View (spheres, rainbow, N blue to C red):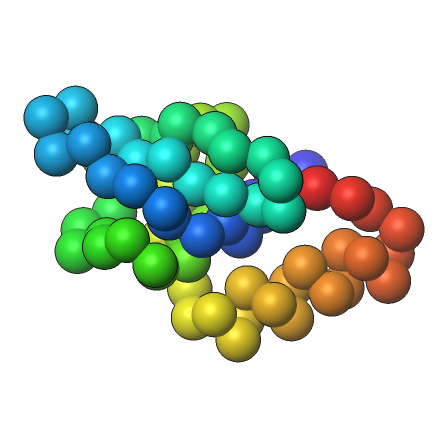
Length: 74
């Protein structure tokens, strides 16, 4: 099973094509190599250190709510 978690982009390093994302109080560096046109404030789906695609803020919130209802804390 593959699990991707939505997170908000809070910083982008143009030199390395990496971003810092935030989920709650957790911050993590991820690669943007697989996604185009990402800007600070966008939400992306994260899996094993890579942003897979952009999602809307509403979709990110719905997904995180479903995780919470299932008792899963990403």
